Amino acid sequence: MWLAVDIVWMDNAMNYVIDPVQVEFWSLNAHTAVSAKLLADGKNMTVLYTTWGPGATAPEHTHPHEQMGLCLQGEAVFVIDGTEYLVQAGQFYHIPGNVPHAERNDGDEPAILVDFFSPPREDLLRKRFEF
Ligand code: NI
Image (cartoon, rainbow, N blue to C red; front, side, top):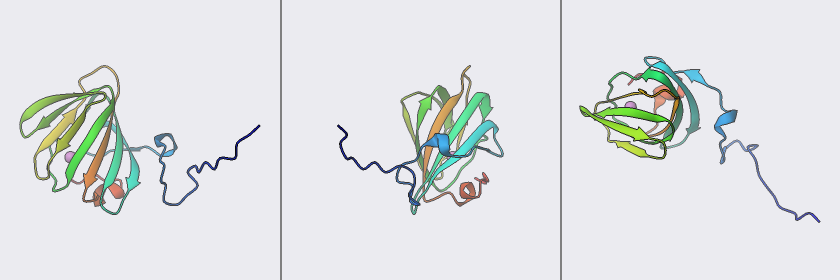
């Protein structure tokens, strides 16, 4: 006997539930070996999913947006305000606005990071990294 259960999948324009597998990848400019997916384009924040191949790098940069995130897979070195931090799968990070930072993957396996930016990153919404 079947129970009547309403399950709503991703057929809603608001995308209340987001499956990264369904989101298209694009190459993140100004980075090496980093691909990105724009997971959510919210009113007050932007969520970006990035995959970092072995040896991947991001240039040191600074933006007014507050940036928080988590490492879903692998590990990444964050240089935040001149100090290096190793962020491993399952760990989170927090970069206040206007604090210089860079990231890289020194490991042998791809790393996956999910970033939450507030206010929204207008550049990333255009699939361009400008900060
Ligand atoms: Ni940043």
